[in-house]
Amino acid sequence: MRADGTIYARSIRKAFGSKPVLKDIDVDIASGEVCCIIGPSGSGKSTLLRCLNGLETVDSGVLKVNGEHFGYDETPAAYHAVSRKRLAEQRTRIGMVFQQFNLFPNMTAQENIMAGPVLVKGADKRQAATQAQELLASVGLRGFGDCYPAQLSGGQQQRVAIARSLAMDPQIMLFDEPTSALDPEKVGEVLAVMQDLARKGMTMVVVTHEMNFAREVSDSLLFMDDGCVVERGDAREVLGNPQEGRTQAFLEKVL
Ligand SMILES: Nc1ncnc2c1ncn2[C@@H]1O[C@H](COP(=O)(O)OP(=O)(O)OP(=O)(O)O)[C@@H](O)[C@H]1O
Image (cartoon, rainbow, N blue to C red; front, side, top):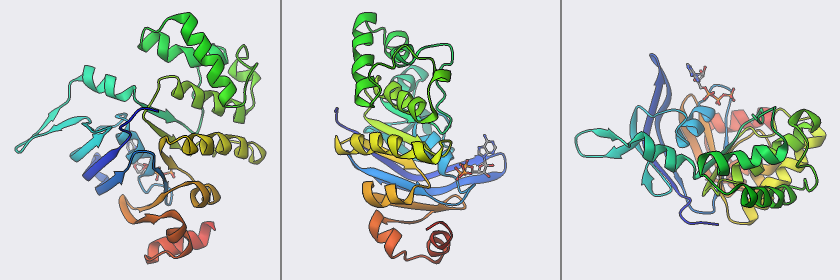
């Protein structure tokens, strides 16, 4: 796995129209850290994740991903946008997995995984195919390369989606409720793949409602409410002994 894999965010703000959605967010994530983000619906979890991979731009604040200014270059007087080309290059090193898998329906599992390396990075097709086979095996899907998404279960599709992100050799993986669209019996197979990635040292930020995963796999936990990080700390400590009233009230509902 490649270095840097860090995230540094200071005073991140983001509004949609007149509605502030992220209010002065600070986040520090170290290389190899697994950070879970929990919080009620509408608290800004997905927006934060989308800012971390450039799907949304922040309105103000400093954001460094993989040690580089991301979206804006810090200057004393103003923020200067990082060039589109540079941002696109930086984004290839951040993988993102969505709730709804988002596979290309007209491509096989193998073609889905090969698409990024071949189309974005100009990789050799034969090498990309070999890599795709290896990635399929690593997510427990050896022999499924010729299947189209519609022929796969939700859990299998999500594992292909993870493999597709990994094909770009990311330094950070972001997961936005990766198991929320799955049948309960399929959740474990996706979490197992994520746990394996964590064990291998991948930096991961995971928006999730899976409290057992948060407790057992994550290093840190971040509780968001109303666009703010209300509480952050060691996952087991926050879940076992929350310090803030809002965190306690939320956990009483979900645990
Ligand atoms: N593109 C957008 N345009 C306008 N408002 C948006 C947009 N994206 C998100 N919002 C609003 O920002 C707020 C935060 O949304 P976000 O999806 O980040 O919350 P969340 O904590 O991830 O919620 P959930 O758990 O339901 O996914 C919500 O009020 C939402 O309606």
